[in-house]
Length: 181
Image (cartoon, rainbow, N blue to C red; front, side, top):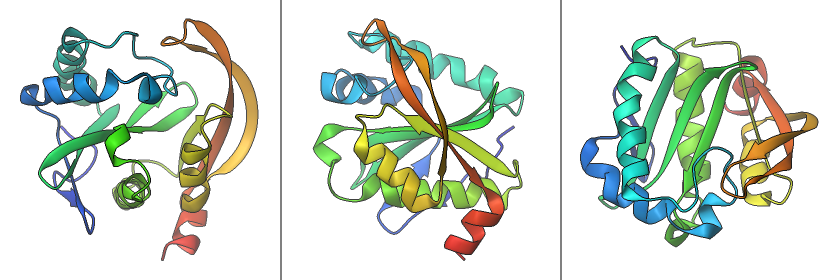
């Protein structure tokens, strides 16, 4: 069972469930060092088998009401993904966008629609997220949504094969509702 409604859309995007047929496109977009170097958990190099394995794992993750995963579709093409997963710090927002789609405001638009759906579904009273300090675009997206910095820690960055500084952020439902009525 899903945490969120099956249909989430924004002005330019559809946020739909990922399907096995998405594997090649996911591998293509995440197989770009400029994208994956900002993420913590995917392997590098990222291959088709990695995308297939991730897609196969989603049903088990979502069955326990612990996560929700969406493919971002722009102009009929998968362009990225956005997720929430229950982790140690709470429900954690994560996302990535393929490099050909950068600089168009697509992730800001997708994240706003997604976070609004998360809070409307009463999944929790707050979301946590964060980014590497060098990932200024991701930190700007979080700032626009209303996330506030809560600290910094060192986390493993699997694509880079090393531990990296990570800025932790949090967004509370009340703050989001004031900023985005």
